[in-house]
Image 1 (tube, rainbow, N blue to C red):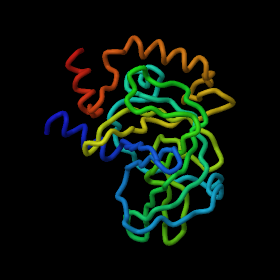
Image 2 (tube, helix red, strand yellow):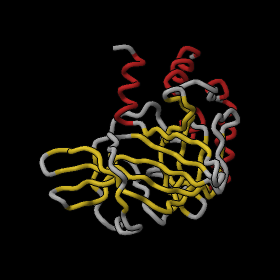
Image 3 (cartoon, rainbow, N blue to C red):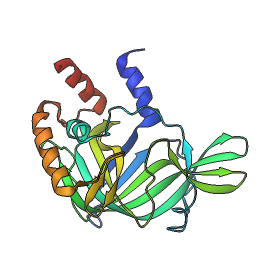
Image 4 (cartoon, one colour):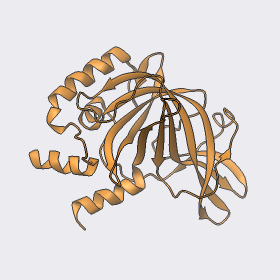
Length: 238
């Protein structure tokens, strides 16, 4: 199996693809995120804010295409860092995970509260006030008919009524320009919270990413280039 095939396999199991397109009617944006099998059934609505306090089921996560745990990772591979608030969610039936167990995805409606940073070479631009719809998997798990929230191992589960920071990267899927959701971080009083570290103020995040992305200009996104192709290009350059 070639390196590209291995990375594509990892992407299917671990990466969250986000497609961004303008809504002509309202000037917002819609985002779809893939991570599990979609069902043709219409999404079933769930009431907002009821699941945040429940125990979250942890599901095995695949290997992401690129690392996105630090500002250096994000500066190298990311296109945007956005502060978003989750304003709604709907459950979507997916596939059976075992006897008496079903995993479900979620359609999240989020509003972009602030654009913390965008790569100077970003292909897909996002603005404050845009409303995005993001599909996440798994979002819920049902065992013998009892539903509880779920999330991939090591990932932050975004809950309705709360704010988060999302790091995204440009990608191309089926010929369409899209965004990949690289990682989700906690957002605390204007600061970005990394695992096992103190919160980093927004101004420092933006300044550090601006500096680091300038140093990594050669690895920046290009129109029509998938993230896999970008990884190969950067690897060849190094």
